[in-house]
Length: 289
Image 1 (cartoon, rainbow, N blue to C red):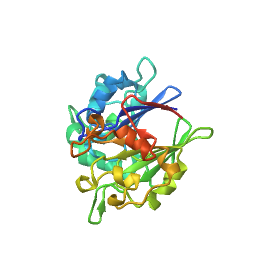
Image 2 (image 1 turned 180 degrees about the vertical axis):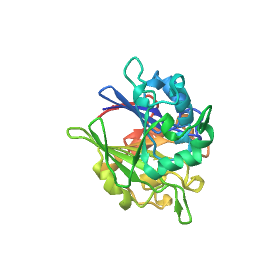
Image 3 (image 1 turned 90 degrees about the vertical axis):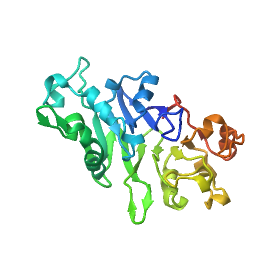
């Protein structure tokens, strides 16, 4: 499987596109998340939006789902509405409706809390999420298979307010004879002992990471100091063998400007290697696993 980094930033960054990854296996393409800047990321990577077969959605923040309305309108078969996706194939035999994969509750919320207002009313009929996408709702603990890869959804802690935690799911993918990859997507930094079992299973970890000092951190994502195990970050250092396979997907322009949050010089790439990480991800970077 080939993995291409389409974006490793989000709304905090002027340069990088929303965190988004393109997976390719045997002629099929899947996106992991599709944020509001992701259409530009596809354009920059010379990827035809009509070539996307599947989209996995980890949670409902706009930097992860903001491009779905645009995808729906571009891909919708206006000439044959209302219709069935499997009856309207293009010259390459592809349906116009990409498959949309996510936890069942997350898909319900995606329509009711986000896309419904912009996509429900169409001339002549009321649309639904299934009008634009071939939805694949996954029940809790349900595994699914993509191109021979077994996929597990790993629920993360994300935006905790009182007793309410936003639904967000990382993705663990594995296949015999290949490396196992763990996309954490957006996640807060739990006790390392809670997530270490998943880190250990993976040969390659794509870890979201804020690079702000703890006192300025949003609390939404894992923080560099926490992941590195800095004492002032009130964290326990992860084992070296985990850090060495962890690629950091950063959120701020400090990384590109080689400055810290105070404006002082900081060589982030060197710092990450010195602290034991595999490094920081960059747009256009590719992996074969």
